[in-house]
Length: 406
Figure (spheres, rainbow, N blue to C red):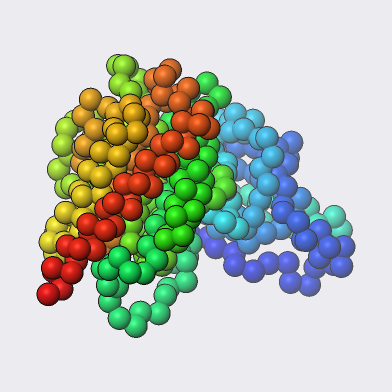
């Protein structure tokens, strides 16, 4: 399959001294010098920036979209609506893609092949203008020329040196827990009024981290500690890089209809426990898709690993910690969903050697749940209950591990 990808890794060689001084800060997006306009049999995207930066652009299919990455751009308060001047392009989203990188995603309403792209730098002012030329083609040609850049893992942490296989925690050493605040950056997650899932889950993650650290028995790593976008695969990569003993992903969903409320704990399954769980897992993965990260082609490989490894040892451990969290939340008086234990095929839970759970701490669509999520005292009590559950699970898990090793 032929793919068209334009990547600029280093720029501005031989620029003037004044331009070099400007490069000390982030490039600023100038909406007044930016547009998306129809041209004859195509579309021209123009982005005005305060300075040149490394960049890359490419297209993805199903759904059709243009992705532009920059290192790094301050989007300010710009909105996609300020650029939408054509019926051939849809929603435009801006945000931080991962630390040091910004991303713009443009939904395409027609098959528009990436024809050319160029960033021009004004030698006198240092101002930059990126022009992306898209040409109308057939759906088949668009599919052929679209795809992820041939630079797999460019956003992942450096590969760790592997000396020996990761051993199951024994209860004697410090427990490493990776907390994953759902969504972030360009992906707000569920929304209700001015409340967003990404903000509330970051607050919950920080609260939980404080409780875990205060036990003096745990090392805690957050997959994000700011409003940045972290792809699902990178969240798993962070956990593996940290040699995590436990991975907990925090979410707060919103339902379009119904009166669901309370906490739910999910574990991984190739078959969802119910239709709602299947829809939720699909929606979480689709958030990555719409942010420009293509998950297609990954599931089969990971599923094969899970069939060989996760179901043999790791899945019962994940189920055990999920059950411990449900019990601790119930004992602490935290409202639970009527069916608090469920399973589904969440991509973020697919580390084959790390017990992993996804905790929906409540529903943004529920008035009572929203009030609880905004209450610091409730978050502290919930974090204390989860901490108690992890301590209890780690002791039982270590004892079972001793039996397995004997």
